[in-house]
Length: 294
Image (cartoon, rainbow, N blue to C red; front, side, top):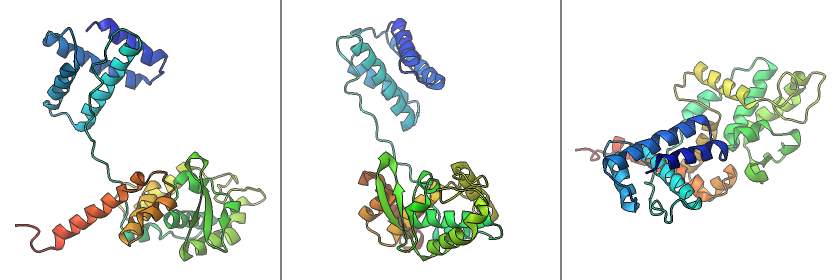
């Protein structure tokens, strides 16, 4: 392969696609490895079999699926570029198939761990704000971006639901239960004005300046709370969303209902929680069934 084509492609990524330096470096490194393979095999006229054989040779080096998938993406992008620029007449990468990557199951907390995390010590007005936030997050499964951007007008305390503006500006109604209601009402009626002092804000959860609380502040609170109560798992605000969905599913909730509550546009996104439930069933079976092991 003419190395000039690789250089032209790298310039295209740099100046037209404006990819990050690290991404460009990765593309360049992998394409040079591919070019060295072609040189060692004395391949000058490339076809689809040559690409397949190259991918097989990389797999034989014990490279993981994600690395192989990355290689295939790079080769497809490279040959698409050459084809669109009329440098080649046929695209040898047309039939390259990416291997299926295993779905990464999300982390979640057990019910006992959630109870620990929600056990917030209440002294200052900000403690009541944090308690209301974390209770509402677990009660509704909303995203942290949705949580921090809630306005007072989005809360219906009387009927126990919130109006959430999700991805793609799609609005949804999400109910919450008695415990979240208790601490939301306590925060709104008794402590929110103490945080605001002489300021005014339309946002439900506010900082000492009367502004919308940042996601970093909530993340920091959750991390510190997890340390205080002795939870060793990697904690983030999103883990409450995963826990919400997993606990609902484990207790018999319909997957379509969970999809609606989470605001997923596609049911396949929600189905990851079914995998979690299946993993738990399998683990419990192996642990408790007397004939699960020889």
